[in-house]
Length: 223
Image (cartoon, rainbow, N blue to C red; front, side, top):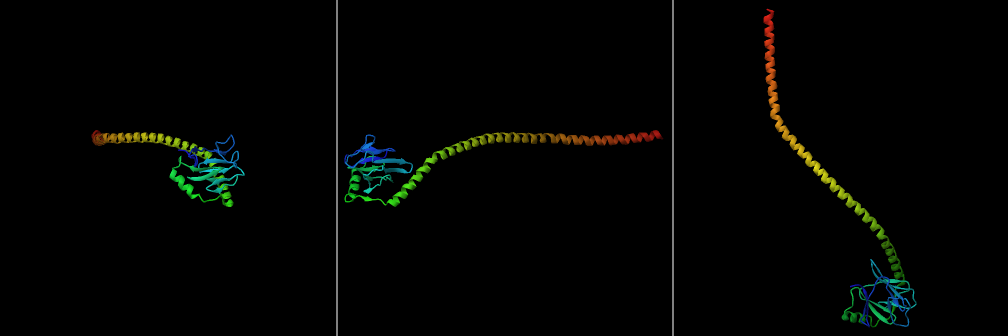
């Protein structure tokens, strides 16, 4: 279930979305009771790093765990954060309506607490760092898009490589086939070559004999 505000008095759970506003104006997502409430007093922000509540530059208090949130500052929200705006008390929940025993437990923990102030210096540093993080997160889509394009190119090249690997494999198989045929042909040629060599040897012997006979006949004629 989506994150939201659990009203400790009415037991109602209100889902919170990004830029959700609280106040007494017509344009607010949630209208709250109380004399010290602005038309738009608080706004919720949802980013990749978490959920936040922002004081919309108002003169009236936005209490977060009984600490006053200064105007134009925001603070991260955790599970079961107590938020007081005007006369209404809420528990921020990341997982829907809050169990009654948890409500009682949290209410008792703040029963004797009075509002106090945040350390402004630390809050200022935290807000500036968060702004930088949000700015960097805003740049991420472009880099992710480029990374996606590069990934697609790599996948395309890998497919091409597979195609070439298949072609190379086919060529290797053809080469092996020709080598096998060549070796088989050599086996067939060897007996023929041996026979040719033998025939040549026989022919040479006969020619030699004929040469001797020719020489002898010539001698007889001269006599």
